[in-house]
Image 1 (tube, rainbow, N blue to C red):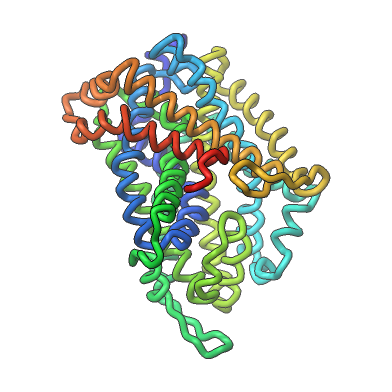
Image 2: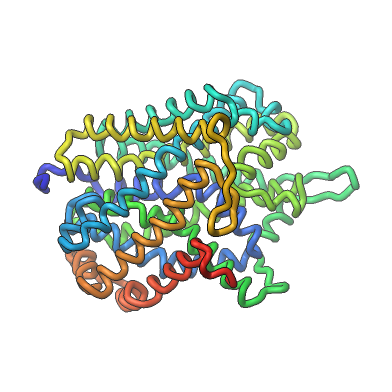
Length: 468
């Protein structure tokens, strides 16, 4: 084992909170949260998401951060240190960021492409039909931009916890929040009259976003919203992918974990909510309700450029600021994903940070090239157990997010809730003398409610629970 006294650590709780929030505030918040909110009845989804964030999300977040600080190890070795027979959980938790990193860098490369397009005044071309498809199916440019994005992330991670991750987060996160706030406020001020003479405004779009719509809601519909919100929380809080265990291992013993966990929850939920304000009113204003059906890459790289184009000259500026914000969010998340793997390699195989980082960069580069080729030379189309169509990127996303993450989270609940007992985590959180405010809730959630919800999510993902 690496000696604990030699382990890097965040300089204080602010550095930790900003780094953890930076990890949480990623592409999932920006392109997935607004789509799900629009699809699932606006305010109804927001209410369920908030309740889950304060219960389900809080439980997993507190558990992983406490495991990291208690063991002073990254995910690959932390679980084995808690209970030697449970080391396999660490392998599963580490496999998730290994799988995610290559395709996340590919998407990061797409963001770089659009940011440069708007920065150079070519943003109007991005709104043309086929622009996105032509780019991702290209043979060389997607690979080059993916590599550029990856190398920037590797450069920051190689500098270490303090000089790299913490310093970068302290600079980038305030800028990111300002950009999100600015674009969200602008989104509420716009109005547009279409060819039929119908005028729509950003405030009307906000109303659709925040007011619960219970029309036609069924039991099945409610469970769909519940599982959508729960799946989103994995992305939003960076849980079940080894990241929070890694970052927790860099937290000093004297830091107040309760306060840090609360701040991360608030930070993340605020940005997810603002992402919805930033996107839904704008898309509604220029494309109507039917335009709000796009998700994932379709929302960010197809629908939004059309919205920016419809804004006229100011749309180029807004588009440039928007993709700068998305790029910052993608970078902060990619840094945490890479750090989870690099830290694991350092702890398990006693590699230096430089060697571990170069090894993970090589793995991510090779995987990223494979993902890029999945849109041209190696293209295929298969149907996944959950019914969605997929090629290489989607298969990797499905394996990491729909299978390994719920399995890792269920395993963590069993280990902490039933084998080591919740007191293990509670004692770690309270060791600075701070009371664990939601102690009773935590015990009930980690032992009973969270594993059951996760099992339902897993069974739905693999196509067994088809009635929900």
